[in-house]
Image 1 (cartoon, rainbow, N blue to C red):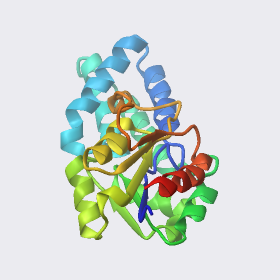
Image 2: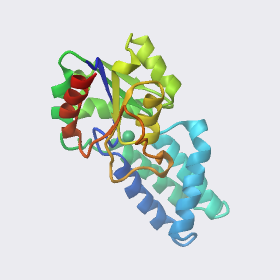
Image 3: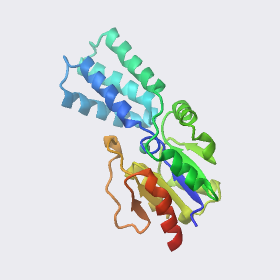
Image 4: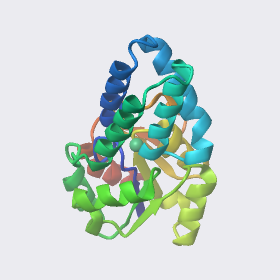
Length: 233
Ligand SMILES: [Mg+2]
């Protein structure tokens, strides 16, 4: 029996990356006189990579990285209007309504019986709490872990703190790097549900050699997969 099923949130239960891409389009429009698309995207990605350790994951850090990039590509000449517009796009992202991915609600409810359901997500605390409340799924989870990083050590801490054996825990998410590989590394089950849009900094190799790794094409396949794993362990 799998005693704990853990879900990633962004781009696993609800759309997220698409809002970052839309904002990046507007960012590009605002700075099109100063940098071409490829250069701007590369500079922004560099800034995001530099800033993760400072600001963590989420929209606030993304906005600061856009401002830093705007200063960089304009050699500090960017106008106050453009900075104001960047701040406004960030505030719009923080206010966007939740769009659940297909099968999210049914899958979470189908697996709740007899198991501990956890939500494990990175990002801004306030924003993640808002999205969970808006998703209508808050009541279905036994616990919510909003963490600054998804490392094997962080997952081990979550499982140990709740008395969950890692061999009886399954984590599902759209990021191999953050949701799947670290859990496989500590002896848990890792399920990848790819999302067409995934942030470049989350790219990783598919761990096809691991016996506890599975891949599904949509959340709706998870209850059958859990049943199959439980028949065989
Ligand atoms: Mg995700």
